Amino acid sequence: MNTLVRKARSRVAPAAHASPAPSRAPAAPLAAGVRSVGEGWEGGALVLLTLVALSFGILELYSASAFLARGEGHPGHYYAVKQLSIAAGGTFLALVLSRIDYRRYRMWAWPILAAVVLMLVVVILPGTQAIAPRINGSRRWLDLGLSFQPSELAKLALVIWTAMLAVKKEGKLHSLSKGLFPFLMVWMGVVLLVFLEPNLSAALLIVLLAALVLFAGGARIGHFIVLGMAAVPVLWGQIEHASYRMRRIIAFLDPTADTQGISYQIHQSLIAIGSGGVGGLGFGNSRQKFGFLPEPHNDFIFSMIAEEWGLLGVLFVVALFAAFAYVGYRIASRAPDRFGYLLAVGMTNLIAITAFLHMGVALAILPTTGFTLPFVSYGGSALLTYFAAVGILLSVARSSGREGAR
Figure 1 (cartoon, helix red, strand yellow):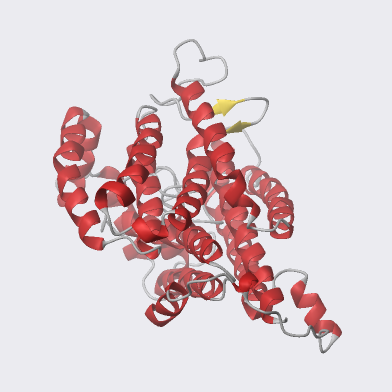
Figure 2 (figure 1 turned 180 degrees about the horizontal axis):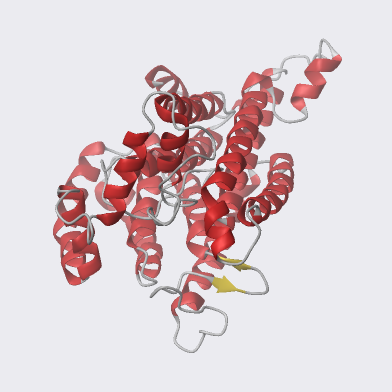
């Protein structure tokens, strides 16, 4: 992976400025078919990985949610069918985005970010409860006939915007005042709006994804270390200020401290994972989903996979998202220009890093919080965001193949 990143970061001029070689036609109809979803093998591999993750996700979602659905008066397949219908829309979205030249996002970066910021403001404004209701103590949803979480769109918007500005400020990224500071001002504005919902985990993830794009663009790691150390007291103050956040930290430090109270979720997750053994209990045979583990179809679906499919299932999921990362970084390394490289890095991280954070929470490596497993966990806003990321990656892959064929 480091080789791919070094190769891509060494590119200084877009291929569009090079003298084009004579074009040649595809060698066979198969080549044309591959180019319909993405140039080169990377585009086809990305589509295949997405279909595998989605298919496995629908299967496991049905198993994890059937008991919950029946308890709510729905058929057992209720959540799985809803997820499948959203996935159909996500597939169409990915197809549309794959056909849009990714370079257009450089022009659209500010309007996209402005639209998302407006939605985030509406979510937290007093007097907008009719379209931004408070659910479980937070106002994260915007209901405009179709309910969605603007914080999910903020991940995409800030990655696109950061990639755009990183290209514009390429020669200044080593400077803290002229390079990193302008990014921080915008990042903090978006993050503050998400935090006020409140949604601390989403706010931190948004900053992480944007910072990784900037680091890939050439920003100094020392600046991020210093800023991270400076942010620790502020972050700790926010954790202490909210008792439920402090309880999550205590449960993370000792999952066995209060297994009927603050450590209940993570304790039940570890029971599910440990019960799976090597081969698992078998599909549909999870015991923890019967009212023991909260959110078995969402925040802890990895625990359900480990219980029903065992270590083999865990290794399969890890390998699946490791492959996502490899293919995504391959697409980035072959991008025709710097913006395509940074955009592909950001979209790859959006999928891969979120997946590994989800697994870390289930394994008690990270404090309990709401990270979804891409294409597997239930949730429409997140699922559409992941499909959008795939569509943008395919657009970069298609452009890479066209440049390479000249």
